[in-house]
Length: 202
Image 1 (tube, helix red, strand yellow):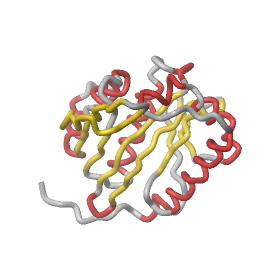
Image 2 (tube, helix red, strand yellow):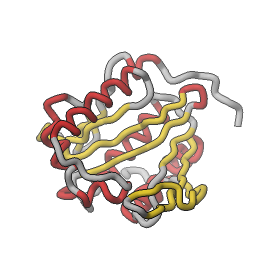
Image 3 (cartoon, one colour):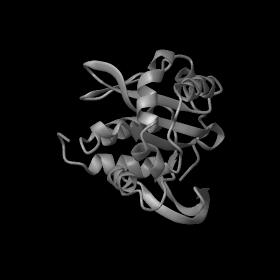
Image 4 (cartoon, helix red, strand yellow):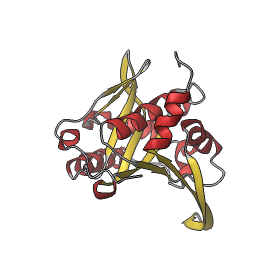
């Protein structure tokens, strides 16, 4: 495939892009979201699958939000806070980070308040973010790196059309144990093909 020489459009980082889906509003993080962010990131069932310790202080949530602002300003990542259309309270987040503009590549990440697990929320949000990445950011490739055994995450990536490209053995040390990290990738041409092959009305 011929290389696309377009860089990520500056407009993506000029004003934070809001994304709307059937049920969700994906919006810019706000400092006042720290309380609801803490409620998510202090839950071990949310953080342990990606080998992170749960938050123990709200200051950690405040600091994380500040880092998100800095990352966006530096054009290194966009993290959307997931809310329901009729409620602006944060129920999760979905991100394109590790952005490499020169390679038209970024990494997908996501987490969700467990109250909203198994409702299709993560799939709806991630699908919209992937579409934004390919259509609006002009990305050629989106990656994801869940840990082996995180079946909800790998199942979501399978549903989105990602391909398992490798198993990075014992890549991360967490709580005295080494964990394998899986490497998934999705190319724009594959995403377009999958999207065009879906029955109308979906």
